[in-house]
Image (cartoon, rainbow, N blue to C red; front, side, top):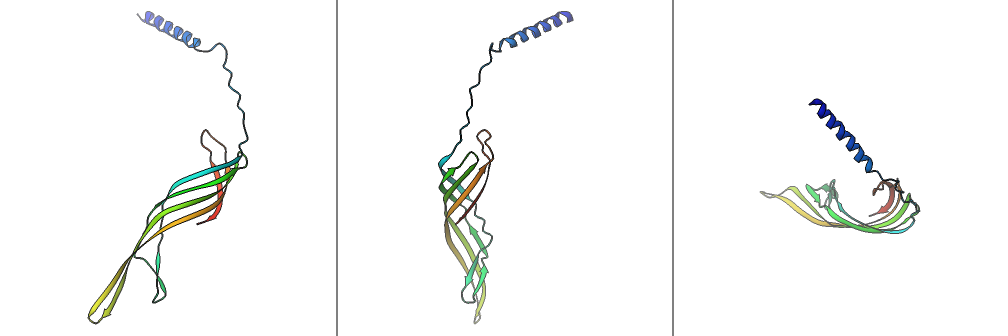
Length: 164
């Protein structure tokens, strides 16, 4: 019984190798020639984003005693950004562009509370709630060095100068 099972197993191994050999084409397929072109020229860009506004403190001016005081509580909401620009690709590795971006309405909420003032036998305390909003435009000039393209991804290093 063991001999017949060994013979059947050996026959299966031989036939499977024969089938595998039949899958190879008779002649190798020639790959198409790849041509590299130098990409240069003008381009347009568009940007959409979200601004995570981190308010690290806010002060208000007390006109009567000429001092600045911190709000007791202050918060600046996050906002969407949108922008665009025009650029020029000098060669495969160097790009420059100028961008204009807009930060949408971001609401500010602040509150204060003050010490009391004595008016006769009454102690008066005051508090305020302050509301405002912020929008911003940014203009930037940028330069980028591309570090090569890997599939659909092109990592880069960039620097810019501008103002908001």
